[in-house]
Image 1 (tube, rainbow, N blue to C red):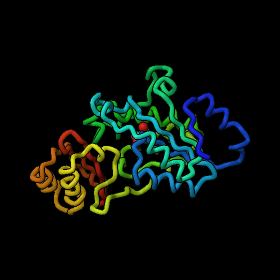
Image 2 (cartoon, rainbow, N blue to C red; image 1 turned 90 degrees about the vertical axis):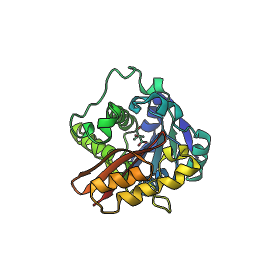
Image 3 (cartoon, protein in one colour; image 1 turned 180 degrees about the horizontal axis):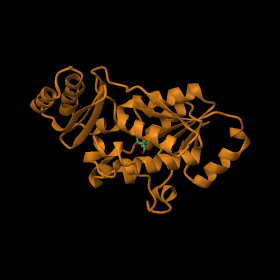
Image 4 (cartoon, rainbow, N blue to C red; image 1 turned 60 degrees about the vertical axis):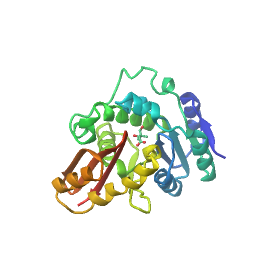
Length: 254
Ligand code: PAF
């Protein structure tokens, strides 16, 4: 049976109980609005661990834009239904007050890779991500935690943080799940208009075209995207664009 716990103290009591004794624990941190991409992370955790914990917490501190936070989809009832169907063991569903008793007085700051790509355009975003992930890792004390490659910069920063702070949880990357047309699944896709949903599939298509970055940017603009950045780092091309007010990110190997 899936247990929903909102209280950190209660979760910690369970965590120390016999239920968890000698068991491997998988953690899948999410902000809800669960889609097939999340389900891939969860299924991997269910296969690889005795106990799976899925956290649902729309982490206010990682939103540099208030409107984006307010409009972030909240589909808890549907999410819980999906998690019960998958037989996830625990859903950790805390409030802001539970997670930030210090009101975000303490935070994790990375000074290098978090300042480029998305970090350049979303100041403070990765401070919020790293801080909440550190909190979740400390609460759940998982053997493994699962993160999607769609948020590749986030994944690398979390890997770096766990090394820097000697965290025992192993970080497991999971390949991006895409729609049949190639669009990387994201909770934000829910906010795209029907017209923009059709347009959006041009984003991964152009990004993986193998064309020079200048040409990629031009084609994206011609298709109606507002281009935030397209940048290559090592053998990976990273991009963020807007369709209306909806921000889409993606990355592909080159
Ligand atoms: O990728 C996300 O959904 C979030 O950034 C995460 C890792 C759950 C932290 O809030």
